[in-house]
Length: 108
Ligand SMILES: [Zn+2]
Image (cartoon, rainbow, N blue to C red; front, top):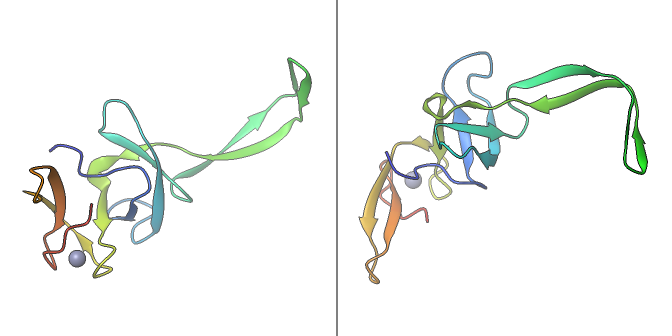
């Protein structure tokens, strides 16, 4: 698989409740099979007021994005704006770069 999806990529959700949603990858978890996408898989959590260091965190409901499986997303190509599979090629410096399988452009 390799590093198909990177932080900062735009991805489209291809299964589950958020099907069709797009968002920016905020985090790739260390094992690389799960990612956090802005605005996707938002969960609400009740939080009690806690005193941590100097500040006090207010009680209430916090919302945050829970990680999703990387197999549930496709990279949205910045060139052709289509959700696409990712291929790899070598650039002129011999570095491995990602390629959009839809339009063939290098996507970095
Ligand atoms: Zn493309």
